[in-house]
Image (cartoon, rainbow, N blue to C red; front, side, top):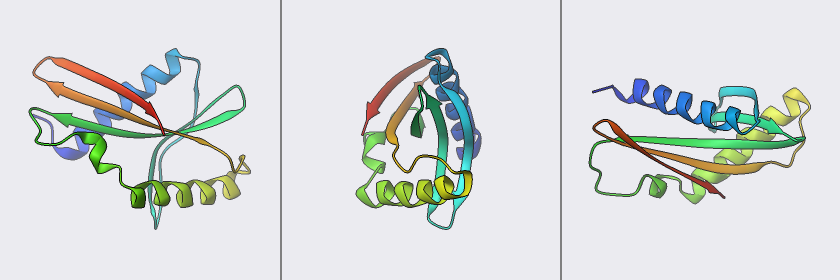
Length: 114
């Protein structure tokens, strides 16, 4: 079994591959600020999408989506605004939640546009 950090990196690789197959280009990955982290920042057709990746292994007692609270969303917004100013990106962005649940050798993926 992977440790938490390795599991997160594995999930981000799956998510990045998924979005690249849809034609998205990576702007940055794991952008940190004092407010939090942006897992993936992608661009397609001049639209920016920030992806929050949640990867879980084995049986869980809750939905991974439950860990994306209003506070988390607000921190993503603030962190993206810092990145946008720094990199001269559009202030407007879309937010996706990309959920990966791994159970044995099977993975279940869900994508939500928030």
